[in-house]
Image (cartoon, rainbow, N blue to C red; front, side):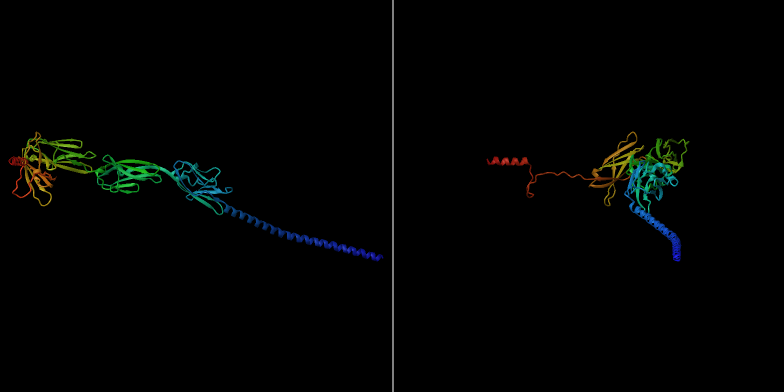
Length: 491
């Protein structure tokens, strides 16, 4: 009994021992296995969490790129210089969006931060440019011409969007300078170039004009060559002297400038008469005038020989641009050709006057069939010869002698003569005159043309008895008397 009890206790202790050992071993294995499995799973879980997080962030960017857009439409802004302009750029949604403003590929703003201060100092942007409060619009104050251009508003995101505005700054025309060749002092025969530099927006158009005979006239294509803001006049003459104008206009306003041009050239000598009549012992005054903007030196010549100022035979009187030569002939050799010459830096010019004893004719005038003529002669006039012919066909000259009128106290003869009786038919005639005095014949006058129409003859009314030649034409009183006699006899 005792032995059975002892065996039961030993078995119980063995079972307990086995259970305890197995329990520890099992616990150790479970802990070690649990540690290994949990570590790997933790790594896997963290990786899964990162991927999930990355996926979530990528989806947000895609959603932002799709949602952000610019609601403002591109536009053209026409702004007067000096004003303020606001270039719109409304973005939806506005939260968390960064907008960039650029002009001509140069950054102005990123968000509200300026980016132009270092790179755009030459543009004089300063504080004139800003982002309008509580918006993404670009605000430009005191607009200047240099602000014109294309402005771009761009939303910075994965898929950027942008709009472009065109800013046009309007400015009235301004003439910067208006110049002429050599400050307007041009030599005759040279070229005149006028240049009119203008500014304004839109670019101004130019119209050219000049004063001509106290009237402002626009320059035409046949007057000059127009290229851009210049006008060129070739081979200028003295008549091109005067005031020139440049007119600029562009729809915003107008402006004008002027410049005075003087065309300098050889002097121009003018004489009132190319022939002067005189006689031995009779003083003659020869006159000449010089047309020139600058003073010219005036000289006189007799048959090509210079007349000295100290000569006792002549008296030279010069006042400014006019000069007179007084001549008193003492013999026939004192008559001849006298020349007035003027000279300046550009050259010289002269005109001649013939001092003669033969008659000098002038002012041959025609009025219908009548002619008039003035004769200068200190010697008595002997003959006045007129020549006439028809212009049509091969008609020959017809010579007529005109009566010599009485001379006036100034040794002038005034001729008035009618050719009505000499013009046989209507049409055109040519007439010329020459005169002889005690010394010689004058030269013929330049031909003058007479246009003459014959007058119709009045119709003569008469009573004609019809019938043959045996019948006679009787007056009314004779006819009545004959009828009365017949009646008395019948009674």
